[in-house]
Length: 295
Image (cartoon, rainbow, N blue to C red; front, side, top):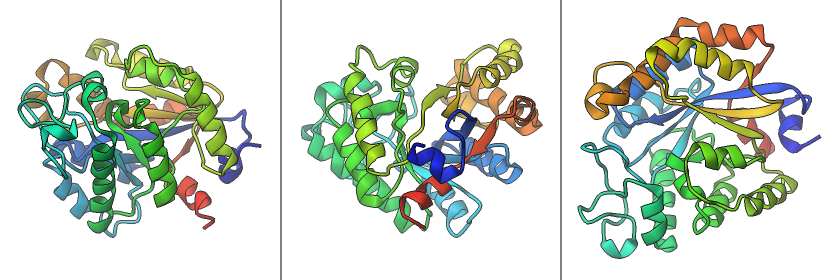
């Protein structure tokens, strides 16, 4: 039995899912959605974007709140047209972390082309440290748009997980991860080998990855139901992006409904009902972190 299944008491062929809220801290609506859905048991965990404007609000909400299973969404990119953020540590062009306007790169490919790994390590470490200093009981680390998992940075990403004794998002089957995130022509074989090495060392890993499907409102319910029904055996990380309405419509007008529809479906209990009907178990990151630390 692999370490992850053992830690969770699961048969490795059981279908289990981490229902994860990405982009917490990006805006007020993302924070509202995380809090409401966490209290309702509609999601199992999420991760916060420390460089973003609404991180302080989320830090205040999460500090000392044991119910919230919250990691750090390591942030090295900023994809929105008019809503931007800068690194915590260095906005120097020499860092390779920023574009000509001094903001984080909009696309992972541009980051990969320019980034200095030492500067990226300083930035990622600063984000984890700031979350911890704010009183968040950090349960894991993952990465916005997959940026920390690019070939030049993945060893740093792994090392930070080991150093802070936090599980990282690195699927045992990485093909779907890179395809869904549209990260280009990446040789996934080294990632598979790295996952095997980490698991041999006791790092709990997920098996597979799924993400917000991004469909029209008319298609949303049927698409999310199909997402649940087609989850593979093993532990799947489902990266969702729920947001209450109010601010996301200004940040990304054409695609805001992806996030508000998702919030509606989760809050309604429909997603949870589909999981129950198909016998899929739900999991958070705190038990994986505690197993990694021998707690």
